Image 1 (tube, helix red, strand yellow):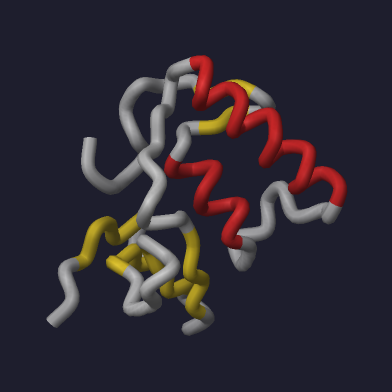
Image 2 (cartoon, rainbow, N blue to C red):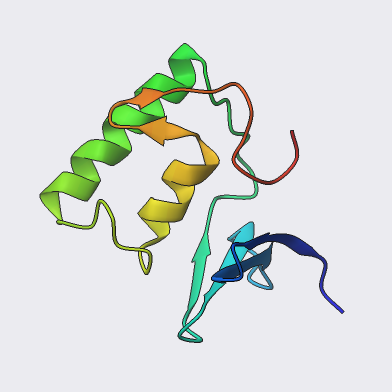
Length: 98
Protein backbone atom coordinates (compact mmCIF):
# COMPACT_ATOMS: atom_id res chain seq x y z
CA UNK A 1 0.00 0.00 0.00
CA UNK A 2 1.29 3.45 -0.94
CA UNK A 3 2.12 5.91 1.81
CA UNK A 4 -0.22 8.90 1.80
CA UNK A 5 1.87 12.06 1.98
CA UNK A 6 -1.11 14.34 2.62
CA UNK A 7 -4.87 14.04 2.74
CA UNK A 8 -5.77 17.69 2.10
CA UNK A 9 -9.19 18.50 3.64
CA UNK A 10 -10.51 15.16 2.34
CA UNK A 11 -10.45 16.76 -1.12
CA UNK A 12 -7.24 15.33 -2.56
CA UNK A 13 -4.77 12.63 -1.64
CA UNK A 14 -1.08 13.21 -2.32
CA UNK A 15 1.18 10.15 -2.67
CA UNK A 16 4.54 9.26 -4.14
CA UNK A 17 4.10 8.93 -7.88
CA UNK A 18 4.57 5.53 -9.55
CA UNK A 19 6.12 7.33 -12.54
CA UNK A 20 9.92 7.35 -12.57
CA UNK A 21 10.16 10.95 -13.72
CA UNK A 22 7.70 12.43 -11.18
CA UNK A 23 7.94 12.62 -7.40
CA UNK A 24 4.30 13.07 -6.36
CA UNK A 25 0.82 12.19 -7.56
CA UNK A 26 -2.37 13.96 -6.51
CA UNK A 27 -5.68 12.14 -6.75
CA UNK A 28 -8.44 14.74 -6.94
CA UNK A 29 -11.93 14.20 -5.59
CA UNK A 30 -13.09 13.67 -9.20
CA UNK A 31 -10.68 10.72 -9.49
CA UNK A 32 -8.29 12.51 -11.86
CA UNK A 33 -4.60 11.93 -11.16
CA UNK A 34 -2.00 14.69 -11.55
CA UNK A 35 1.71 13.78 -11.49
CA UNK A 36 4.24 16.52 -10.70
CA UNK A 37 7.69 17.45 -9.31
CA UNK A 38 11.02 16.21 -10.61
CA UNK A 39 12.45 13.61 -8.18
CA UNK A 40 15.99 14.73 -9.07
CA UNK A 41 15.35 18.29 -7.86
CA UNK A 42 15.13 19.59 -4.31
CA UNK A 43 12.69 22.31 -3.30
CA UNK A 44 13.90 25.40 -1.44
CA UNK A 45 10.84 27.34 -0.30
CA UNK A 46 11.41 30.70 1.35
CA UNK A 47 14.75 31.31 -0.40
CA UNK A 48 15.99 33.35 -3.37
CA UNK A 49 15.96 30.11 -5.36
CA UNK A 50 12.34 29.62 -4.29
CA UNK A 51 11.48 33.17 -5.38
CA UNK A 52 13.05 32.49 -8.79
CA UNK A 53 11.00 29.30 -9.20
CA UNK A 54 7.79 31.01 -8.12
CA UNK A 55 8.32 33.94 -10.50
CA UNK A 56 9.03 31.56 -13.41
CA UNK A 57 6.07 29.26 -12.66
CA UNK A 58 3.78 32.27 -12.11
CA UNK A 59 4.60 33.48 -15.64
CA UNK A 60 3.85 30.03 -17.06
CA UNK A 61 0.58 29.80 -15.15
CA UNK A 62 -0.57 33.26 -16.25
CA UNK A 63 0.39 32.62 -19.87
CA UNK A 64 -1.63 29.38 -19.99
CA UNK A 65 -4.40 30.61 -17.64
CA UNK A 66 -3.85 27.75 -15.17
CA UNK A 67 -2.93 29.66 -11.99
CA UNK A 68 -5.76 28.16 -9.90
CA UNK A 69 -6.35 24.99 -11.93
CA UNK A 70 -6.02 22.04 -9.53
CA UNK A 71 -5.71 19.71 -12.54
CA UNK A 72 -2.41 21.37 -13.48
CA UNK A 73 0.97 20.05 -12.30
CA UNK A 74 2.05 23.70 -12.06
CA UNK A 75 -0.59 24.35 -9.37
CA UNK A 76 0.72 21.55 -7.12
CA UNK A 77 4.39 22.36 -7.70
CA UNK A 78 3.67 25.95 -6.66
CA UNK A 79 2.07 24.60 -3.46
CA UNK A 80 5.17 22.50 -2.80
CA UNK A 81 7.42 25.57 -3.19
CA UNK A 82 5.06 27.68 -0.97
CA UNK A 83 4.46 30.18 -3.77
CA UNK A 84 2.22 33.19 -3.34
CA UNK A 85 2.27 35.24 -6.51
CA UNK A 86 5.91 35.58 -7.58
CA UNK A 87 7.35 34.94 -4.09
CA UNK A 88 8.09 31.84 -2.05
CA UNK A 89 6.66 32.85 1.31
CA UNK A 90 7.65 30.10 3.72
CA UNK A 91 10.72 28.05 4.53
CA UNK A 92 8.41 25.13 5.30
CA UNK A 93 7.09 23.01 2.44
CA UNK A 94 3.32 22.69 2.07
CA UNK A 95 3.84 18.91 2.12
CA UNK A 96 6.61 16.38 1.57
CA UNK A 97 9.87 16.15 3.49
CA UNK A 98 10.58 19.29 5.53
